[in-house]
Length: 132
Image (cartoon, rainbow, N blue to C red; front, side, top):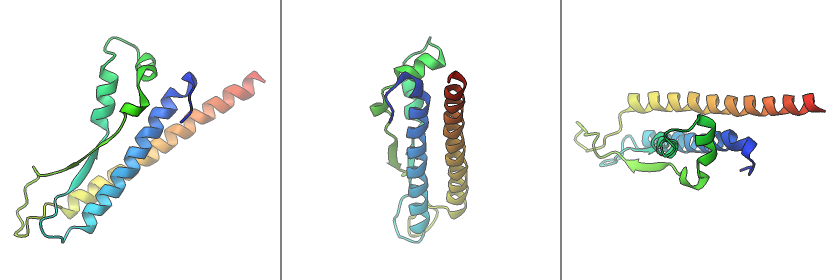
Protein backbone atom coordinates (compact mmCIF):
# COMPACT_ATOMS: atom_id res chain seq x y z
CA UNK A 1 0.00 0.00 0.00
CA UNK A 2 1.25 3.45 -0.89
CA UNK A 3 1.04 6.12 1.79
CA UNK A 4 0.29 9.34 0.00
CA UNK A 5 -2.91 11.33 -0.37
CA UNK A 6 -2.67 10.98 -4.16
CA UNK A 7 -3.14 7.24 -3.89
CA UNK A 8 -6.21 6.89 -1.61
CA UNK A 9 -8.44 5.69 -4.47
CA UNK A 10 -5.81 3.19 -5.59
CA UNK A 11 -5.47 1.88 -2.03
CA UNK A 12 -9.24 1.34 -1.79
CA UNK A 13 -9.30 -0.34 -5.21
CA UNK A 14 -6.41 -2.55 -4.09
CA UNK A 15 -8.36 -3.64 -0.99
CA UNK A 16 -11.42 -4.29 -3.17
CA UNK A 17 -9.32 -6.43 -5.53
CA UNK A 18 -7.97 -8.44 -2.61
CA UNK A 19 -11.51 -9.03 -1.36
CA UNK A 20 -12.69 -9.99 -4.85
CA UNK A 21 -9.86 -12.50 -5.22
CA UNK A 22 -10.68 -13.99 -1.82
CA UNK A 23 -14.39 -14.21 -2.71
CA UNK A 24 -13.54 -16.07 -5.95
CA UNK A 25 -11.58 -18.58 -3.86
CA UNK A 26 -14.49 -19.01 -1.43
CA UNK A 27 -16.99 -19.51 -4.26
CA UNK A 28 -14.72 -22.08 -5.92
CA UNK A 29 -14.47 -23.86 -2.56
CA UNK A 30 -18.27 -23.93 -2.35
CA UNK A 31 -18.40 -25.58 -5.77
CA UNK A 32 -15.74 -28.08 -4.72
CA UNK A 33 -17.93 -29.04 -1.75
CA UNK A 34 -21.18 -29.39 -3.66
CA UNK A 35 -21.41 -33.08 -2.75
CA UNK A 36 -20.16 -32.80 0.84
CA UNK A 37 -22.98 -33.72 3.25
CA UNK A 38 -23.98 -30.94 5.68
CA UNK A 39 -21.68 -28.41 4.00
CA UNK A 40 -22.95 -24.83 4.27
CA UNK A 41 -21.87 -22.38 1.64
CA UNK A 42 -19.63 -19.49 2.59
CA UNK A 43 -19.39 -16.02 1.17
CA UNK A 44 -17.53 -12.79 1.69
CA UNK A 45 -18.96 -9.32 2.25
CA UNK A 46 -16.71 -6.38 1.38
CA UNK A 47 -19.34 -3.98 0.09
CA UNK A 48 -21.01 -3.54 3.49
CA UNK A 49 -17.65 -2.80 5.12
CA UNK A 50 -16.80 -0.19 2.48
CA UNK A 51 -20.28 1.33 2.67
CA UNK A 52 -19.98 1.58 6.44
CA UNK A 53 -16.60 3.31 6.20
CA UNK A 54 -17.85 5.77 3.58
CA UNK A 55 -21.03 6.41 5.54
CA UNK A 56 -19.12 7.68 8.57
CA UNK A 57 -18.44 10.93 6.70
CA UNK A 58 -22.01 11.74 5.71
CA UNK A 59 -21.73 15.33 4.50
CA UNK A 60 -18.34 15.20 2.80
CA UNK A 61 -17.33 14.87 -0.83
CA UNK A 62 -16.29 11.46 -2.13
CA UNK A 63 -12.66 12.60 -2.18
CA UNK A 64 -12.86 13.57 1.49
CA UNK A 65 -14.62 10.32 2.38
CA UNK A 66 -11.95 8.26 0.64
CA UNK A 67 -9.21 10.27 2.37
CA UNK A 68 -10.85 9.58 5.77
CA UNK A 69 -10.98 5.80 5.32
CA UNK A 70 -8.73 3.83 7.63
CA UNK A 71 -7.39 1.04 5.42
CA UNK A 72 -7.08 -1.38 8.33
CA UNK A 73 -10.87 -1.11 8.79
CA UNK A 74 -11.48 -2.40 5.26
CA UNK A 75 -11.40 -6.06 6.24
CA UNK A 76 -13.98 -8.16 4.40
CA UNK A 77 -16.22 -10.38 6.49
CA UNK A 78 -16.40 -14.09 5.67
CA UNK A 79 -19.63 -15.72 6.76
CA UNK A 80 -21.35 -19.07 6.56
CA UNK A 81 -24.76 -19.01 4.92
CA UNK A 82 -27.02 -20.91 7.31
CA UNK A 83 -30.11 -19.01 6.12
CA UNK A 84 -29.92 -20.52 2.64
CA UNK A 85 -31.99 -23.59 3.43
CA UNK A 86 -31.32 -26.80 1.60
CA UNK A 87 -33.97 -28.96 0.03
CA UNK A 88 -31.43 -31.73 -0.30
CA UNK A 89 -31.50 -34.72 2.01
CA UNK A 90 -27.80 -34.34 2.83
CA UNK A 91 -28.44 -30.76 4.12
CA UNK A 92 -25.83 -29.24 1.77
CA UNK A 93 -27.02 -25.78 0.66
CA UNK A 94 -24.70 -25.19 -2.33
CA UNK A 95 -26.58 -24.56 -5.57
CA UNK A 96 -24.24 -25.11 -8.53
CA UNK A 97 -26.03 -22.68 -10.83
CA UNK A 98 -26.09 -19.87 -8.26
CA UNK A 99 -22.43 -20.37 -7.35
CA UNK A 100 -21.38 -20.35 -11.02
CA UNK A 101 -23.29 -17.11 -11.65
CA UNK A 102 -21.75 -15.53 -8.54
CA UNK A 103 -18.27 -16.73 -9.59
CA UNK A 104 -18.66 -15.30 -13.11
CA UNK A 105 -19.91 -12.01 -11.65
CA UNK A 106 -16.96 -11.85 -9.26
CA UNK A 107 -14.50 -12.50 -12.08
CA UNK A 108 -15.99 -9.56 -13.99
CA UNK A 109 -15.74 -7.38 -10.86
CA UNK A 110 -12.08 -8.33 -10.42
CA UNK A 111 -11.25 -7.46 -14.05
CA UNK A 112 -13.12 -4.15 -13.71
CA UNK A 113 -11.16 -3.25 -10.57
CA UNK A 114 -7.95 -4.18 -12.35
CA UNK A 115 -8.89 -1.89 -15.26
CA UNK A 116 -9.73 0.93 -12.82
CA UNK A 117 -6.30 0.69 -11.17
CA UNK A 118 -4.60 0.61 -14.59
CA UNK A 119 -6.59 3.71 -15.59
CA UNK A 120 -5.60 5.56 -12.41
CA UNK A 121 -1.92 4.75 -12.89
CA UNK A 122 -2.12 5.77 -16.57
CA UNK A 123 -3.54 9.12 -15.48
CA UNK A 124 -0.74 9.61 -12.97
CA UNK A 125 1.83 8.64 -15.58
CA UNK A 126 0.36 11.13 -18.05
CA UNK A 127 0.35 13.87 -15.42
CA UNK A 128 4.00 13.20 -14.58
CA UNK A 129 4.99 13.26 -18.27
CA UNK A 130 3.11 16.52 -18.81
CA UNK A 131 4.85 18.25 -15.94
CA UNK A 132 8.35 17.38 -17.08
